[in-house]
Image 1: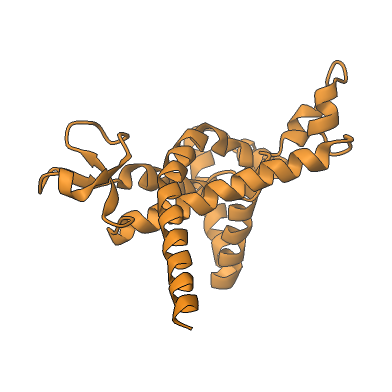
Image 2 (image 1 turned 180 degrees about the horizontal axis):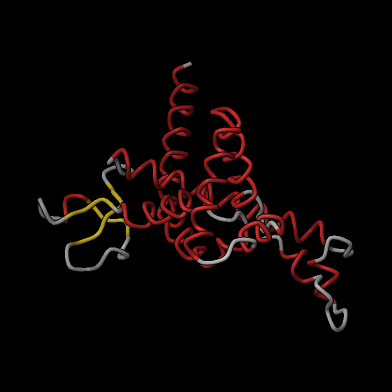
Length: 206
């Protein structure tokens, strides 16, 4: 999060070069003081702070001296009558997105689709043209596994490990999460279907 003490430390130096040098020295000192496990714990806390909440910390920002109270404040603010319902819905939606994104990414990284299907794009359609396609319909050399959306989100994650941590910064990337999540739907559907068929066969064999 934003740290007033760090801001005052940086502005205590005169000139851009002096401030950059002072910040680099301070960063090196803090990394050294953390040690390996301390830094791992620090990065874990930043990950939770940035990606752990489904409501994007809206309560904090909507409660900054509003001119008047409305029904929406009863939903979105922590002391509102319906905040728990709102918070659970947001968190459930966010967790669903994460699970579906992991399913799609695992399918792409393993280069295995759901029963002969794969996540891919055709050459010339652009890196965001992600869809579910049959391998047999794509000529050899014309199909690419859809790494673009997953790579973009992974790059976002790496960036926020060194940037200021705040859930609201991920809002602009929600469409990318949705694209990946949609690709994860057939993966989970086929996996569940295969699991159900296996259990059914085991029951019949008994």
